[in-house]
Image 1 (spheres, rainbow, N blue to C red):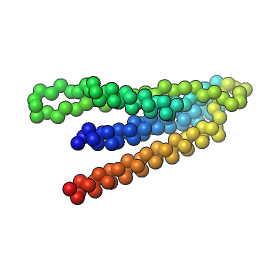
Image 2: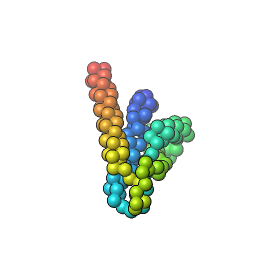
Image 3: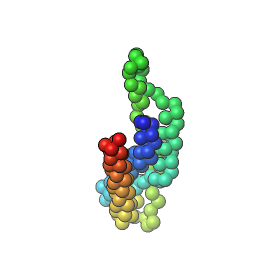
Image 4: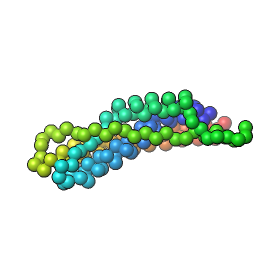
Length: 138
């Protein structure tokens, strides 16, 4: 049962974690928009999500769990740690102080990421409501 639940929401869990990390990177870009020589960063969401899912699948196949001393203990797998590769953004126009933050681009990316994050949360909420409905009926 838990494996099916993990399969059902695993993709969205990975996507939410990655979107949260991207939101932090974009927020740092916006916060440093006036910092001389600051290099704007971002991640390639599609590439990083693919890597996170592949890493999760490998981790599930070679799960490292806690040492159990009794057959009645529940085996718990340790959560995976994933860190995306942040890339430097190439500016459309050079600035005099060497800062590569384009505020219009950063705001657009920030809002787009926020909408996708909220959409994933809404989808997961509906999935859990459906699951709860099935459990209450059964």
